[in-house]
Image (cartoon, rainbow, N blue to C red; front, side, top):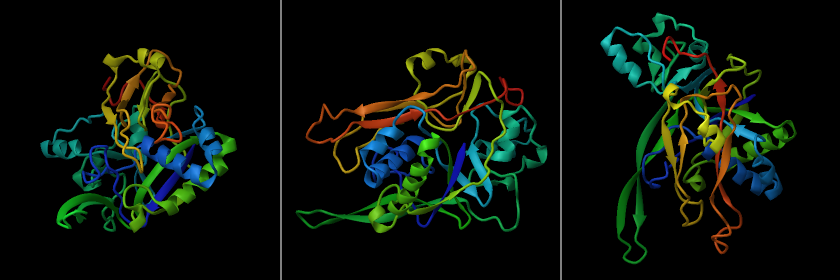
Length: 328
């Protein structure tokens, strides 16, 4: 398992598939990250490497989540609700989106988190920290920036607002990756190329640029096998995987992934996937793999598409104990 930090030089805007001037995603979802990598790979190496990346289990990515200095944050497991008696803390905890790796590893192994950390002073920007110091600053924030569009016929102007995500000086996003050994070198070259290209909207004006830093000797403490899994990516199961899900013993949410093809007016087919933080129980301990789906076929649009358009739903799962802090 590899891990990489993305240290942004500027803000970014990633639309959620509704409108380019709508709210931005706060983090980079796995399908968006994979698509950006494949697009960069096509420019840098050509279609042959893209085809290699698209082979099942060749490149499996988590979504990219926040980090602050050396502390990594993961999505809050959807069935984790600690036993808190303080009403105000319960309200604060409901706002938490991400949990530090130290807390998460205890939770996934069924251990109790020290009650000293159930304190709003450990919550910053929806991230539940394991460390606290007077030097702490923002991890990320969103700002609505005004833009102007000019009518080409009348030259009249209209103002609209676009949400952009900014990170603190020591903060950014990170992601995990399982990559076929023969592709690691090429993947890292493509990732550095993508850093110079940028990700998201308005890249021609310097938005979404970042630098890449590998997290050396990264490790994650978890169970070797289980029938219960914690999801770190979007997940589109195969038919057999879907039929093996024990839905009554699972905690999950769905995310509708849609939007337009880059530099085109074609709209992708909507695909509903399990979202990050979902806890899914299967009737087998075999780790689910997920699928890569074709959402637009070049055969249907021969004049507009040079290749099929894919949506990556390969699963990045972590096995965990049968219950979380007594919740089953």
